[in-house]
Length: 225
Ligand code: GRF
Image 1 (spheres, protein in one colour):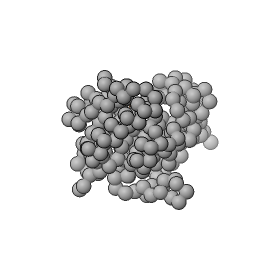
Image 2: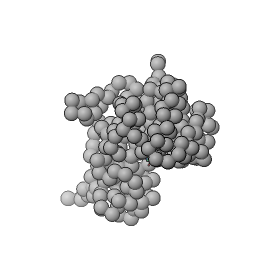
Image 3: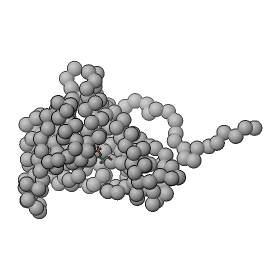
Image 4: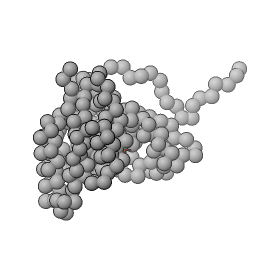
């Protein structure tokens, strides 16, 4: 089986990267993690990748200076590392740099991200706190293609979790993260096997039936008659 060559870009602890590495360790998984790149030298995820014997690179955005010129030079270095490794799909996994429209265009339909909300609600940062402040009862995560606008590209997959009455941003983040680790590998798998189709309106359709059942919060109570 020819496996899809996947590179993962991180800035931090890399738990989603680890979920992808673990999924790809299975011989049946149709993708392989060929490279992990961090823009932060001491990102904890780098050590995790190294211990799984995945090649890693550090490309520090800081080294390229500030402003637009610095950003473009950083992205050029990223792109050449990705091309050198023959990456076919790039997974952003807690990668904390905004990517320019030019970079996004270069990697069109080959650049995906995971975000801890049910997009298009709650884009950006600090979303767990924002969801609690809004009083939503169902939260979740989204895997989507990256477009020039932040957290706005075509949605590939989502997972939902209930918000509990005594949730803190941390407890909600933990519940969502468990689902992130299931959803991200599944979306990569679907891309690798060709289950993804772009509809004429730019949205993504994924082949196959969804798992049945709805998540209701509050759940209906079954009362004795
Ligand atoms: C995750 O919550 C992800 O959805 C968001 O950043 C966080 C990264 O966590 N984009 P990790 O580094 O994968 O543990």
